[in-house]
Length: 247
Image (tube, rainbow, N blue to C red):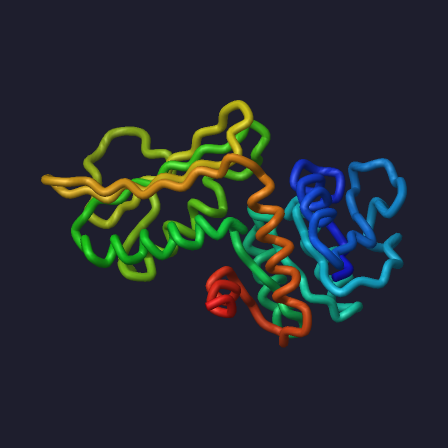
């Protein structure tokens, strides 16, 4: 599997390179990173990228979305999009590109998060009147808040509670409304990623929690997604599709 890695010099770029070195038949044939000094297979823009590849893995910054998708469309390459924080315009661009190329879109590439999301959805349905709070923790360098994973957990709740509304970082005065889901972001030190969902009634509380101990789990997941995407038809794919194929 020949991979172009967008975000080559970043923290996750390094994790993907290390994980790829342990996967038989996997090769990072090119890296694209605008803030890195060009060296070896790494260049600063897609305009400079001439490598032949089978898939793109993107762990960069959402500002690179347009250039990355333009390149992928021209080369007819599938994309594993692991960058979060896209603007509304960039989200529209992703949906448009998915009509031409296959795009794997996930806020989190951990298998454990996929399991957590399923459990949250089921619990929210079983406790229709339960109050829900989502708390996420990440390192102090993360730019977007709440995290893309926290938003995906909220969307899992909204799937079974269409009236649910997100209350980001609750502040001020006022009682909790019946449909609100509190969402809170913690940024501290070198926390890899912790996501906690609490569902409570007046008599009990369920706490569902996932903690990543190493960024390697996300790198491994992105490589599995990349292998899964080769040969797929245009469209949006996610972790549910990957897990379903493995059943």
